[in-house]
Length: 300
Image 1 (spheres, rainbow, N blue to C red):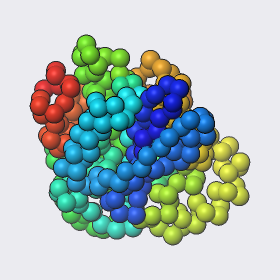
Image 2 (image 1 turned 90 degrees about the horizontal axis):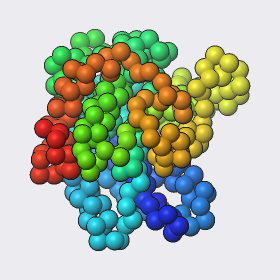
Image 3 (image 1 turned 90 degrees about the vertical axis):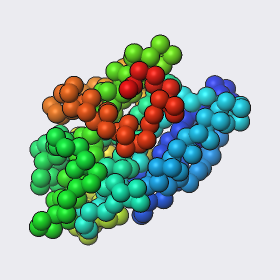
């Protein structure tokens, strides 16, 4: 989704949430939020197959071309909130040969990345196997088959590892941005937007009991549940926070990890600089980023 206002002439690029498959449309509650905040807001919707790395590169090139020729205004922010999970089936791979949960989570002004409390071992009630970034990073994108199928436990672990990798990568991104004279005013943040009671993730590739809880119990018991989990909220509530971060209405100069709109500490492994650099180097390879197709001249 791209949105612009005639007053500030800026462009906010927003990804999609979870989808039924691998086709993602640039259209989320952020579209409505952005539009309602300005009577001049305009949005455009594009379909992009995030499982196809070549298509992602082509899309990025087309956005660059449109900004350069003036058909799109400059970017004020990029919100990377597309993700995928499967708690009801075995490992799934993209056409490029990458595990889907990790593939969809990785992709100035500001870059806003979505994480979750699931990235921190022991913090999410659905966790059965704690997330960890392995020494061999290829095991993240090309994992071995599960020895004893446990779709919920192993599926959630793959999702949690993708959130952990995103936060870890964010710290490296900020370090590289700060080194670049032309890019050091761009900031990257990772946000745990809260446990979203009406998320589509609770209706897709998941178990019946989670769908039932989302549809029937959360609406009835939300005030009570919030006493035990203050991060429980709706996607609309989270959308306002993400929009404020993306447009720098909140924390305009800050970098790092946030829970809702509060600066927070991320999981210990994500703070390890050696791990951060290993993840950074690998993602350049996985995403096919070279000196010729990035503005990060010192990234290699």
